[in-house]
Amino acid sequence: MCTLTYIPLSPNSYLFTSNRDEMKSRSTAFAPSIHSKEGISFLAPIDAQALGTWLGATDQSRVVCLLNGAYKAHIPTPPYKHSRGKVVIDALLCSNVENYLSSYDFTNVEPFTLIIIENKSERTISQFIWDGKEGKSTSLNPNETHIWSSVTLYSSSQRERRSKLFVDWLKVKERSNAEILDYHENLDHDKDEYTGLSMQRPQYCTVSTTQLFVENQKVDMLYYDRISTKKSFASLSQKVMKHESEA
Image (cartoon, rainbow, N blue to C red; front, side, top):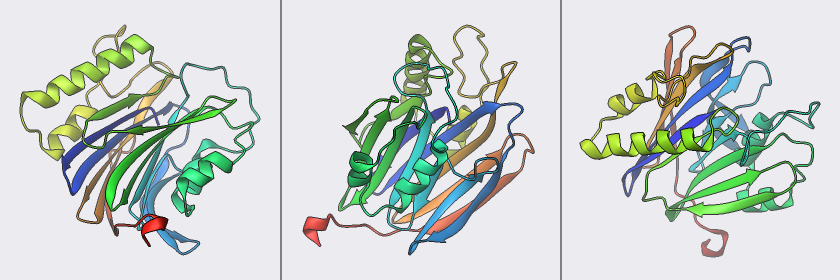
């Protein structure tokens, strides 16, 4: 997954939208559905090739999304221990994300950036970056808009320009969920800057757009398969979880 935006709408709601960019030869994904494992229900599209996912939400009020790469573009050196899609599944299912990320041995897992949103009495956003050698966690402000662009396909200047254009666009007026979805579907018009949030390059293209609307302990997921042009919709009830110390 290569482009992701987070927009806080109110104390009880937020919008999380992602564009998945892949090589044109890669197979598409299965539409989002509810899966149950280890006593947890989670909603996610499944990668048809690796059988993992890049984005999911659980009934435990957790949302996890992965972007390819860490701080800078890297040269892939397969074979890897497992796909990065498994990291998302594991982060969705684990009882404590912080413990999982700090204790798991990610050696020989391709670099990635993981975004985790949780409701534990209040909303939190964590960013975990694995650069192939070490991992680093950072807490982000849940009351601010955030946008991420994968380092594997966008330079630092391109990422900064995309961020500025998106934030400026949001400031013009109050935007609806549909308008935000449309914005993510805009193709690049400048071959040097890649300012649009959707991609159409000789080898890569945006294969899907997924939008999560989370409000009052419920997540609605709209999935747009850009290859087949089919749209799918699914929902999952969530509950606010307390910290272990509060239980």
